[in-house]
Amino acid sequence: MAKISDLSDELLVKILSFLPTQVAVSTSVLSKQWMFIWMWLPKLEFGFRVRSRYACLRDFIDKNLPLHKAPIIESLCLSSFCGLLQPEDLKSWVGIAVSRYVRELSINYSSYDRSVALLPCSLYRCKSLVTLKLIGKKILVDVPPTVCLPSLKTLRLDSVTYSKDESLRLLLSCCPVLDDLFIDQDYFKLVNIPQNVSCSLYSWKSLVTLKLHGEILVDVPPTVCLPSLKTLQLLCVIYLNEESLGLLLSCCAVLEDLSIERGCNDNVKALVVVVPSLQRLTLTIEQGCSADGYVIVTPSLKYFRLVDNRNESSIEHMHMPELEEADISLMEDIAKDIEMLFKSITTVKRLSLKMSFNGGNETVHRDGIVFSQLEDLKLYIRSDNWSKLLVHLLKHSPNLQILNLLLDYPVSVSSSTTLR
Image 1 (cartoon, rainbow, N blue to C red):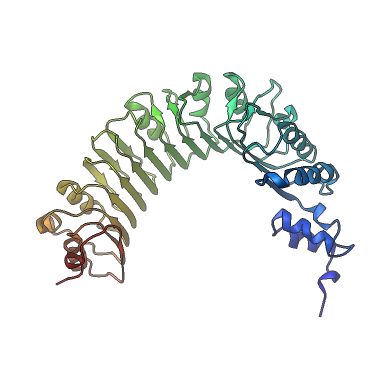
Image 2 (spheres, one colour; image 1 turned 45 degrees about the vertical axis):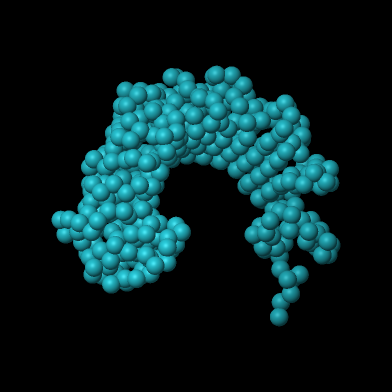
């Protein structure tokens, strides 16, 4: 039987690559053969979470990262919380990674003091970089005029600070193959993406994924054109006007996955989603949003998730003839809404319902609403009248195979346990 010590160094490196960096490093004490195996690892991850271990970990990285033997660093992930990592150390280590042709760089940095982390200029000229993720408002994005990121495909900027107004425009303008963009902004500061940025952002032909989170002003120019966009997230953003969302969606010819979250600062009255190509739709509507209804016309939709936490809401029109799975959570029970909703989802095979059903039997029985393809039902018990809804669904779901009942409300036992 072969011993692990008989395996080649190349195979040992492959085995260690599946372990966390800290565990892989600990194998260096096993024997002389293992002493430097970890230094060939192409993926490295270091986290500063415990203050008492900061100095030890810092010295370890300072000593070993410059001597790392892997010709290419596939991935370097650095995370620091509560200001444990010093900005100058971060800058130095990123510079080393760039010199080793790093392909994926992820930095999560926070600090309680006024110091900010300034990354080396060489990062913005790294031709090997494919993925860049910067998380934390203490990261200062200071883009030099010589920026050039010809291989960058994925960019995440999460609550970072820009050194000047031109930084974002300059950065995006020099990422010719970018196809995955995530911008998350601090919820306490409204960010208006400069017009010269938005014009190029909303006409990015190679962009496949666009995620905008937080206080970002969505100002869609008339020239909008996103021919490759398949995934779009608009979470708690601010729209310039009522037409902004519709204009954006109308120019996403191949959009498949759409997520919209409306927060308390949402300024759109009626939500209209008309996307023929859409496959997945997630709508989250928080209290404080306009009580105006929504119109959904998605003839190719397969999955629909709706979370509506408003005390008042209305559904004006829903067209989802190919729907297979729905996950519905409503705060209030409005008779006409439930009727419209049920009519729109009768094709589903899998259904999850979380709603307070307080209406009479005529509400769900009207027009003979039948779930002819429903096989899997998950029903959350949220009110004393939940059995009325369950009886209707059982009676009008001839192909039901799986039923899950989950208690989500302190209903009285006497009103919830008797079914006839």
